[in-house]
Image (cartoon, rainbow, N blue to C red; front, side, top):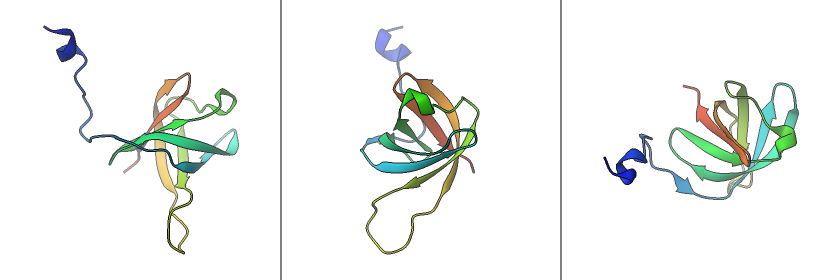
Length: 94
């Protein structure tokens, strides 16, 4: 099997590379600001300080900041599914 086949994208939704400021609420650390690295229909990857890193399996709430319009953006319940030195991957809880 080729190396490329071993690294095949396993996600069911394509990711879009975009940098958006978000408000992240965690159980133990309170509220922090982070920046998205990418986003999809199922989740996001957030770049954040290692001091404010949530644990895999932890449920968090995320609100995108700076969107056009007068309404406040909704809070979205998510769970941490991946952790890397520069941030965390979050999946939307349905």
